[in-house]
Length: 102
Image (cartoon, rainbow, N blue to C red; front, side, top):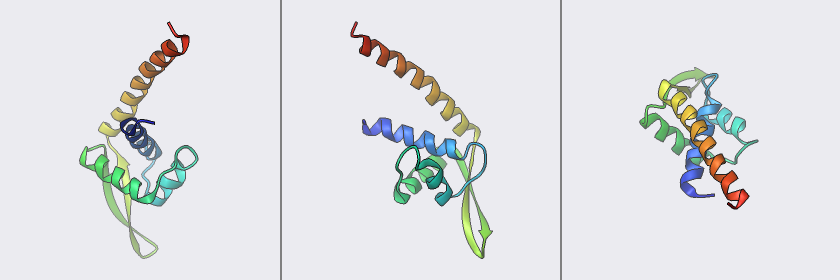
């Protein structure tokens, strides 16, 4: 898979994992793993990029005596998911054209 396409897919998978509820790193990896393999180092790079792009916000909360970082999706993040869905429809049309061989 093209690196740029994979990067976009990973970003949207991470956003989707926190779409319905705030989450933290280990849980995000666990939620995404059945669909796509994601290392911890890759996840935290993605999370930082998404935070910089204002697609999620981060808060620290104490859990079992330790601080845990929770990630919350923003309107920009929700819009990115929708944009991806729209782009994917277009890609599927292109795929169908190629598959037909016209």
